[in-house]
Amino acid sequence: MKPSNDTSFFGHPGGLRTLFFTEMWERMSYYGMRALLVLFMTASLQTQGLGFTVATAGAIYGLYTGAVYFLGLPGGWLADRLIGGKNAVWYGGIIIFAGHVVLAIDLQNLFFVGLILVASGTGLLKPNISAMVGQQYGDDDGRRDSGYALYYMGINIGSLIAYLVTGYLQENWGWHYAFGAAAIGMAIGLIQYYFSNRSLSADSVAPANPYQGAAKQRAWMGVWAVIALAVVVIVLAHMGTIVIEPVALAQQVAVVFTIIFFAYFGFIYFKGQLSDNEKKRMWALFLVCVASACFWSGFEQAGSSLNLFAQNYTDRVLESGSLLTSWFGMDAIPTVWFQLSNSLFIIILSPFFAALWINLAKRMIDPSYTIKCAIGIVIMASGFLVMFMASQYAAQGLKVAPMWLVTTYFLHTVGELCLSPVALSAVSKLSPKRFAGQMMGVFVLTYSIGNIIAGLLSGNFDPENVEQMPDLYLQIALFSIAIAIVIGLMSFKSRFWEKAGIEEKA
Image (tube, rainbow, N blue to C red):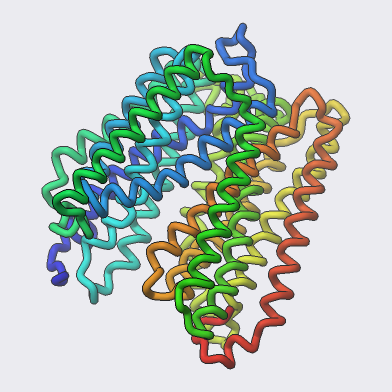
């Protein structure tokens, strides 16, 4: 690919502008709805919620967020083989918009239909729009990394807008308006994408490795067969012909995803004709994958158990005369607003962490990938130690100050910045080159596994049994720390990998 001389978007190609704003509004719709899910499912029927138990709501939340990442695998395949990235983002956005509209119109009766549509559309849009960012640059274009940094900023701006808007609407206008705001956000993203997508590079349009002739026809027949089967299952489930128990299903899906992870990882390791050095790198990558699944199972409590803690046991009452009370007539901080702490801290701290690793390397202090991931898990676990102390006050019938949750989100964000970008870098550098794309797909499975486990764990945090919360938060913290210690010890024990000629430390 030839280098681009286009500098129309803050020194970057104009195609990045299209992707920046599309992703910003898509993330606004995704995070806005995700923040509401557990609150809506556990709200009583009298308040127009679904009245689900915390265990059921947590399982559904885990299945939904886990499916979003898992469906990125077939979504990437569709773009690479059949329709191309540009069309994948467009059709994915339309499906997401349809799902949000369904939710906004009839939350009680079409809730699961809306969730399935949003998850399916996100699986089609999300992996391909991320890949398209890199396609706007030439192979030797030095702007690529900063382009991804700018794109990542769009994601966090979108999530900030999501929490502010949907949180306010849910507290002051009701569920339908809050879910409807997510549909409006996706609609804005689609409109600007439609009118500006001509600026995308040619590599973003055509499939990267398309099927031809009969193979293409068979692939399309398979796609339509899967869609038809999914529609039949949805209709039967909606009619009550098929009864699904969410907690049991979440447990089974977690097991299936874990088996798929081990099977695919093992297949590449044992049947991929890897050299000794590549196999040693794979062991390092395995530790990174374990760290990732563990981390996200704790981090994703943000939208579930921590969200319920904010609603039920955090003092959100605003003082009379405060800015929010005077200007917006608000009596309390919206529950969802606590989650915007993560996006705000990422925007503030990202430049600091980018500089931190560079400066440490200059001082010959360069922790290995696995050590950085272990540090991220420990810092995340410390957030649950904060919640252990806060929940002790809640167990006594007190409402705690907002700073307890804000501190937890701060520590979780620091842990995320230690682990998430490092893990992605590890996958790209430690994977055998001929399996790089497949290994990224295998790594994405750790997000799905972590999210489903997070949902199952959150089901234990029932506000009606607040006396159990301190022990539950402490158990998550101690288990996470134990995993981090094991990963750290295995990393130190394996220093001989470097002597085998591995550039990247494992």
